[in-house]
Structure formats: C-alpha cells, structure tokens
Image (cartoon, rainbow, N blue to C red):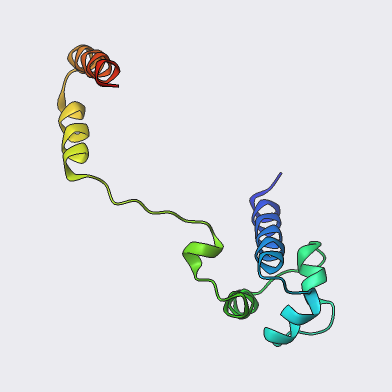
Length: 111
C-alpha cells in the first residue's frame, strides 16, 4: 500500500466523518465550499484527487483547523519529564536499565 493512497483514504474518511458530525449532506458541503456537483461524493469515494486549495475550502466550510482535521493533539511536555529522559540518555546502558527498573518499581508502589 502506498502513502498516497493512505493519505487520500484518511482525508476522504475525515471529510465524511466531519461532514456527518455537523449534519451536512454532500450537496450542502459542496455549496458551502463552492465546489462542483458530486465533488464531495467523489472525494469521499476516492474517485478524484484533491488539491490543497480544495481541502482548505472544505475545511473552512466544515469550520475546522488543521489540528482538528488531522486529529493532531500536541501535548506540552512537563519540563521535569524532559529533564529525566535527557539524564537517562546520558547514562551507560547498564546503569540506565537499573535506574529504569527502580523507577518502575517506585511507580508501581505509588499507584
């Protein structure tokens, strides 16, 4: 399976899901995004290639941003966790393994 097909498949499914969540018909979304007749049908059924500009129109009509459309959830890391990971990376393999084992035991005890 190639990446283009995977991406097209993901985008078509996302458009359909978001359209249905908002209660729009394909025709309503086509009108809102200023697209031709049956264009959303073709997109949702992988019958046409999608231009970036068209995706932007569809996203605007669905009132979603990139993070929402692609379901991106960026989490801010706790600086202490980042520091801990960085420190662990500096240890020799055997020491790192012992420290990790100890941390796992501590975590199991606190739960």
